[in-house]
Length: 109
Image (cartoon, rainbow, N blue to C red):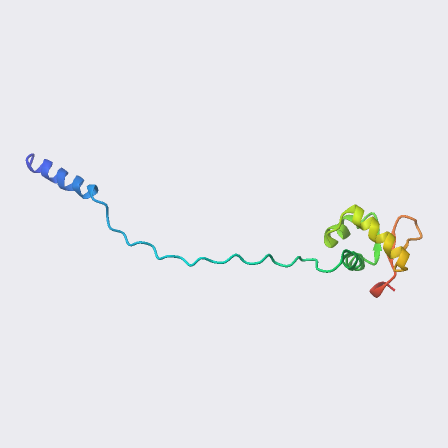
């Protein structure tokens, strides 16, 4: 038995000495990069602002300002510029409390 032990160890270790033949993986097709999806809020910033204010009760107040800004993807500066333009066009007005802004066009008549 002791004479066979080195022979068994040699056979067992020699099996690890040769690399096992493994099939090569199939080549994968290269996927061309897709074009960037269109922006979620398409349209002019003024249209997005009007739609956001309309969806929030036709009036921009201190309570819903952040919601309108987020849904219209606008900054505070953009919002101020748009409100000034809408007032000049007659499509918006400052509310009776002096703190809110009301849309006077479209569904908000």
